[in-house]
Every structure is written in structure tokens, then in C-alpha cells.
Length: 260
Image (cartoon, rainbow, N blue to C red; front, side, top):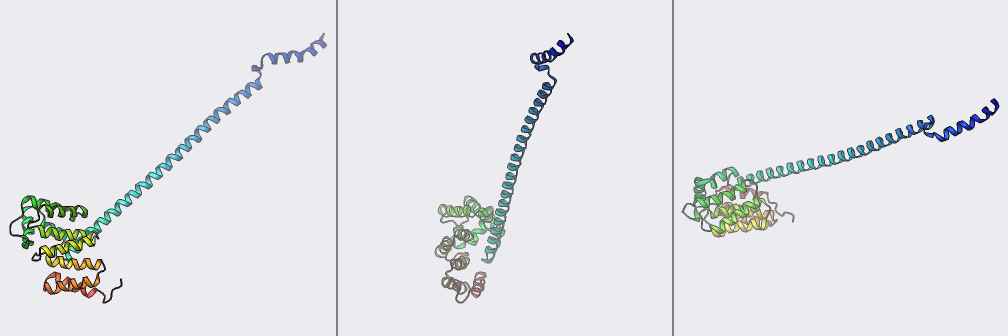
């Protein structure tokens, strides 16, 4: 009897395991490990995705910082160019005998008193004082010139001359139109504007300056014989003036045979 029980024991254990697999401690352990591994894989996958997102955000941030730095550099460059242009205009006006930009605006475009001073400066244009409206329109164009907004100044002076062709400020406006073209490197237009001053307002106080700046413009155009003739005419036609002195000085600096 004992021998028979011993023989049947393995069969009974096998049958018990077959009917209750979930209770197998080894299988339970394996199932638990598999579940834990699956959770860890999900966590790792999430971490990887988050890391990729962080890298992408950091890349975008670097690009934005680069764009900001570029914009800042562009803004600094534009500001420097504007300061340089303003300084160049100031030097040019001083060299032409017209004083600094600040002095010019104070003497030619600042309200009723300034309008009267500008009218006196352009005595050949007429004896009547400009109206407040004329002074305001002229002042706006001159303000734009002072601020370095040359295209706006050009438009303003052209509109002024079209609207008030007989104004006592017309000769001044025509001259400063030439200056606005000159500092904008539009030399053909500048030469035309200065010639108009000499043709329409030959007795204007601005005529010597206009002829001087015409000579300067011709130099910029590399029209050296014409420039020499113009500057020489300034010294002969307006002797003793600041324009004549500047013309003589510039003539001495022109090479005898400048390279083309």
C-alpha cells in the first residue's frame, strides 16, 4: 500500500500544478518581474521623450537668443550710422559756411522768429516775411534734415517749393534740398538743386554756398575739370567770403591729374 502511494504522489502533484498554475510561486514571481520591467520601460520612454523635448526647447531658445543678439547688433549699427550721418551733415554744413545743424535749425526753421531770420538770409527772394504756415512747413522739412531723415526732408522741401514758389524761404529751401540730396549721395540731384539756386536766386545769400557745394558735388562725381572751374569761379565771384576760402583750400587739395 505504501509503495502504491509513493508511486501516485508525482502524478497528484503534477495534476495539482496543472489545475492551479497561477499559484505557482515561480510563475507569480516572473509575472511580477515582467510587470515591473514594463513599468520601467514606460518610465524610461517618457524620460527619453522629455529629454528630447527639453533639447528641442533649448535649441529654440538658443535660436531666439541668436535672433535677439542679431537684432540688437543691427539696431546698434543703424544707430551708429544715423549718428555718423548726422555728424557728417553737421561737418558739411559747417564747411559750407552755414553753421552747425543745430544753429541752422535755430536760425532758419524755429517758429516765427526763426522764420524771419531765414527770410532775412534769403533776401533776394523777397522782402515780405513768410506766413506762419510757410514757416511750419519749412520747419518740418528742416527738422527731418536735422534728424537724419533725408528722404522725408527731400520730400518736404520739394513740397514746400511747389506750394510756396514765391516764398522768402524759397531760396533757402532750394539750397537745403541740395544739401539733403548731397548727404544722401544723390549727386546728380544735388548738382541740379544747387544749379537751381544759382539760376533762380543769383543774388541770394545762399548763392556762394550753392556754388561751393556744386563744386564739391562735381568732385564726388569725379568731374574734376568741372569741379576745378566751379571752385575757381567761387574764389573770383565771391572774394573774401568763407565760401571763397573753402573753395581755395579744396582747389589746393585737388591733384593736378587725378586718377579716374
